[in-house]
Length: 345
Image (cartoon, rainbow, N blue to C red):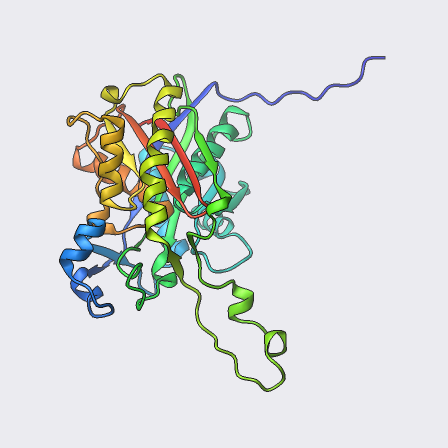
């Protein structure tokens, strides 16, 4: 007797990004304001990071609100309706509510019906991870269109007294609609992790130790030193890892896509540090004619939001064009990374 077989799901042969959108908070924090918190100088901050200013969200600019603004622009550019979205993926490390996922609220408020919605935590590689998941969902027949959002309110996790990180982080949201394509629009994702270096970028305290019940750590009646957790980073190991290892990952993404550096229409790395970007350009032997995203000067490091924010700006400014090939790469806490060649919407 023949055993019954599961009917295979069938999806699109290929996928691509159909639309992109971003949201940048209203409040601008120039280096001059940061210098009120730490003993430094504008020249030191610019030389070390390339950052001149960053955006910090106000009380009304929540993770959900920023995401909805970015998503609305991506949906409009893609020319679809929210009802056509078959999945919502939100990459973030700064939605401070453990459960439910913020993606479910975004899906409901955007009008995506009962589309599956979930959050992922992959720090600065989060958008790339989301893109890979969306590509698999579409080609696997589990969705026609997927909304991928990278969003952060890192100002909530910034220690303004920490001279090594107070100037780095910014807030914002970037979104992309991924859908079916007649031609390959997303190359093989080169992604991975190195948990042996999990301590070089991390939260200073776990939530349970920061806000434990009185009898969990201290004895009855004893005072506790409650301090809001913040992000900390050991800069030198991170810099060396990003410069030496991530250039190799970026090259692997080019090779997997069958593309050479001189065929790119844009290079959009995670906006971590201008010196890291310059080192990767040199290692990849990127021609001077290829536009490079340098949003960090005005946005700071927005983690999961940085790549879609930079992509939107390059397209809006005319620095990059629809149909161009772009190399994207994200890397950060974990340590984690994700790189791919994509066709710009």
